[in-house]
Length: 374
Image (tube, rainbow, N blue to C red; front, side, top):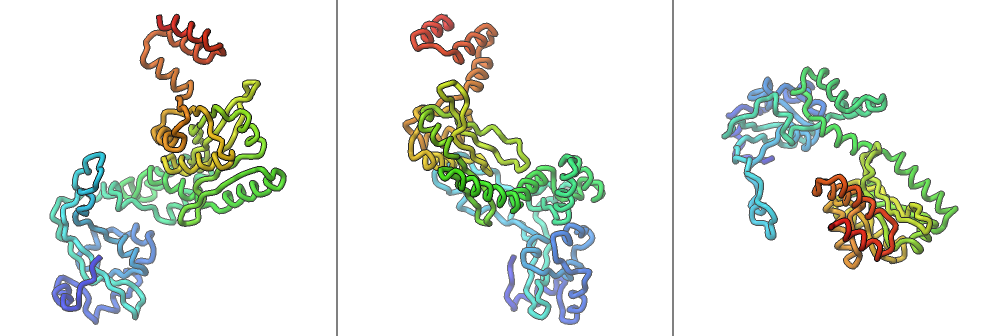
């Protein structure tokens, strides 16, 4: 938003706004915007031109939310070094639409003093405006209603339909189901009670098991993002059986939408044993690097000989960066799926599975493998 110099004021006012005798009108409660909810209830098609100059806002951010614009994409995004792909098509047109506000000390609020609605492009139909990222925003009232209804076991899509009926149609909701899913995940990560309880639980466990290691990672707002833990028995098991470990990040069914990563192996009785577990907020390479480093710290620097994972690119990149000398293999499920997808012979798939999962000495395995290929 631009705050023009005083010399420009007279020209701007000729467009439509503020004379001193209008101050009483500006302060009318009907034109006060104090929350996002106030914005979502406005019918913009009925409030352009002369009426917009009467709106005033409690914060600059609310004024920005009230009316947003775009010019051109910054030049640096076209000249980036080591660009791996072409930039997206330019969608900005240098539109001159603008709303200027200024802070009035007497009222302690931000007042509109200039507005231009001269577009240089076709406008999106109002009923589709909620599809634009800049316009998709949930009000605090809708968030609270959504979270309360979720406790009753009603699905997110059903709640979206309910909110749409309350608003008078899907085009008046102001956001989509994906925005609701994102907000639900964000709200659940903000719940201080659950995060505090699990950290307290781990602290209590460490009083009984001094070897238990856990590490929490928080974001810039202090919200819990990642949580790693490994008890004393798991660490002893790793020292004995940690030569081959499985790195499984496929568990995602929890109310926080946070993947649960399990590091596991097998003992001398061919029983599955868990070395460590991690709750993570996302599945990026940086997050995986963090959790592998926590694993190495908990296990006193002992690296495995082989690590088995799924085919996710972020995991593959992480293993390559952190465990450059460790053999990386796909898990059996992915190998069987690949064989089934590429060899259209049910007999081969069955024998392939039997050989891969069988407990054979190396010479026996090689002989059976050659026979299978032949």
